[in-house]
Length: 116
Length: 118
Image 1 (spheres, each protein chain N blue to C red):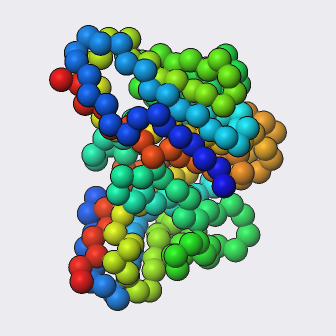
Image 2: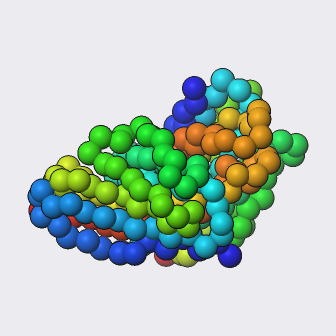
């Protein structure tokens, strides 16, 4: 089974802190994603990466950056956390293969971040 | 461009009753359609998918969905709800891949929370 592991389930940070959310997948997937999940808004894509050191902005990249130094690891960085970044953050991965397989995303359990 | 609309952010059914979760999509090209389920304190996992071919798709845990092109719908059903079905369900759409490799944007709906009443 594909496993996507997010390093923290719950985080509490102060406004202005630099925050790192880590995600590791063990299936050698090329694509990795960061979403935030808010009630009534569903999943919104923050950033994705299709290869090591490659990244693309998603729908809501403002206030976030990412790092992908190794294929299996994708980090989300909040340079200066703000209260409006309090949310559930989900990491996902998917393979780059033919057909529908590359559209199936495998998710981690999520990190619930509270910024006070 | 593509979008997904899930009607009803909360749905309640009695245990043993029919589950019907609605999803309508729009897509400028033939779509691939998905349902994901999120149990409490967990990430999303794939429930079922439609690509091409048979329009009635069966998934895990007794769920199924029917692709209706004329109605641009992909509603999720289960004949008899079980307490363990209580979760949030997300419909998702992506365009049919037209080239090899590359990322195909997946658009998720806003989710429907299913409550099962004993």
